[in-house]
Amino acid sequence: MKIAIIADVLGEENNGTTITVKRLINHLKARGHQVEVVSPSAANETGFHQVKKIDFKIFNNYVKKNGVELAKPDKDLLKQVIGECDVVHILMPFAMGRAAMRVANELNKPVTTAFHVQPENVSSHFGLQKSKPINKYIYKNFYEHFYSHAEYIHCPTQFIADKLAEHGYAADFRVISNGVDHVFHAEKVEKPKEYADKFCILTTGRLSKEKCQKDLIDAVKKSKYADRIQIFIAGDGPLKNKLMRRGKKLKNPPVIMFRPKEELVKVINFCDLYVHPSYAEIESIACVEAITCGLVPVIADSKMSAAKHFALTEHNLYRSGDTDSLARQIDFMIENPQLRNDLRLRYIEYAERFRIEKCIDKMEEMFEDAIAHRHPGGETRT
Image (cartoon, rainbow, N blue to C red; front, side, top):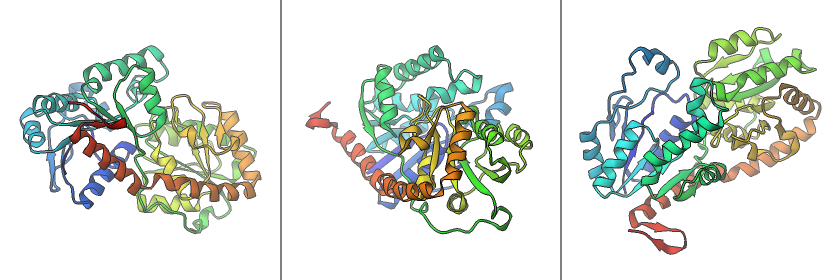
């Protein structure tokens, strides 16, 4: 197949969406598909077409700091790329995605979409991530101006498919995990000497409000074992300096830095516990990567997060936003090493369903169905 992928945001691999999209592109190419990518990223690879970024004037520094630089639509380029492809996969419901949808419909090209951006990811930039009216409006806006014009929506989890249905979305929902790269696997890694006597806790993700890394720092302050705990925060983002200042009050200040996947695998495998405090999460590939390596998680039970469904026992959950609850679960895990070991083995087995090869199989099936206008039950639409 010749597949056009349209991405309003596709920069450095410091967020889950960019990582999973680039992984999809690379795996599709490895299977022999011709992939043409339109994005605002530097076009120094075969099949990549660069467009300009939207000029937000006085807000450009804020936009760049938050890593959400958006593509400016180039209709001529979109017509060229989309016109030559068998199927168009549009990743985000922003300006270029909407322009690509119009072009694809004009050219009568089959279209699939993806739901990678939760309304809470947008509203968090204004401190309104918990506002139901605002998020409801964003869901409606996304649907009316984008998703209602496509037959297929790739949903990384059943959680987000259910949310879309709740908000009146009507489409062929394809529930397909974004998948875990084969580099993530369990292996024996010795702790660095400086952390040999520490209980090491990892959290991974973009350093932004909805990811709630501050809750982990505050919970460790309340732990009975605070002096023994070393936090690792793997990620980058606008809240880095604030988190560093907050962590200085701990006896062992957090280690905060973005890590390439090869290095991250080593950190996952020498840590003792993974904490996922995020308030809003469509899938949380970071959490899946951790459990694939056998690192036992403690996850916020937020109603806006799919990650809570990765909890295999009550000890793998805590009340979202409640740092006392998180501190109790951390202490419980420290005091029960045998349980952690038993859960480690269960998580390694459980995570096999997220292997990238299985997920790419399903993505290929969705593209083929879109070309043939096939839907569940043998239904064909034209």
